[in-house]
Length: 467
Image (tube, rainbow, N blue to C red; front, side):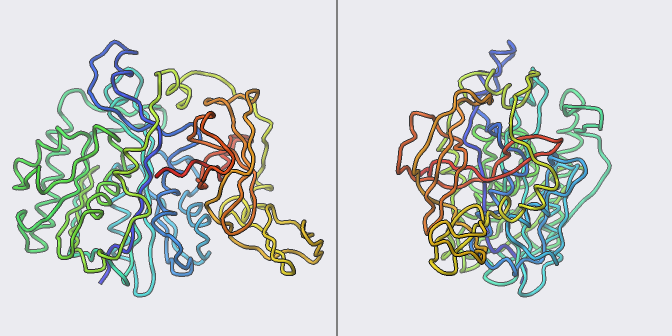
């Protein structure tokens, strides 16, 4: 039986209280706070970090496909799913697909994976969104940034699919054209009344009828919504109890995370699920997707790498709207950089950049990065064996660079002693400079390094291990 094998989530470290945004523009605050992707994060890095946690240490050969969902993919022409697959070291003989241009792209990717997965193979579904609400708008306060990932398979399933249902219908609720920088929607409650409420209700009722279930049979429901208030409006007619049966949307802490939202909510439900629970997942946009899962006994032995709730608790609050404006490039400022790269360099060094491979000396066993021809320890001259480097370590030494222009000064460079061998020189992120000290535990996180030559250059940075 196909179902969910594993899941992962990624909640950015930064928060911006909506009160700060409201005060900047002299408009009412909607209350609570929202997540903000760091200046070196985007939809792809949010999805990759969630995918890395969901996939864990499984054999990359078990992957038959990688699906990426987003409405804010970093490239207009270039597939992001294949970048995720390369980071995970998947075989080249897999199916990679980007699901884009609809808010329900995350659930559409999930339902497609459930349809396509075959015995003995897995399909990784990941989503990341960092949508831009127009400055001085409610959307700017409402949107949040996050990544979610679900590994679908047929073995060691923690939640087997009972049934799925999809409704697709032309509806101009929220949109953005090629020429528009920000999302547009018709004023008032038009989209809620004639779009969201209608499609969510039809999706839930459709999947329950198909599975021969009633709302009372469900233990919990992860239903995507632009806000908690909008969700309340649709629940009244569905027979679902908001307090005992429906997952909170995290609107007060994360915000509306777009295509990643239903995957994050589903992960939060699974974190607390018990064997036998029937759970519902619903996505919205140009119609709706719904799926019912039955939690299996295997859930008892599953533990998420990092829970949604723990990531919400660990945060750094942005002190001003100006800092947010820097991160989002709302003001025109050219940050000079000496970092350069070209498609030739990215192709040549792909194994060292994306899956982070280093070299291991076959004679003395020393692990080193980058991959040298000659061993730096024993002088072995016939080449090193390519190995995947560990993702955790500790600070060997560091320096704060106050001269390099960056949206979040200073730029901290660290030399990281990796657990299990090897040493890498990378930038530190998500960390106040005064916290840094030799021996501090770190983990590597996939980030956007710089933009140059018209390219978005990704690599690994280090950040503190938050417990």
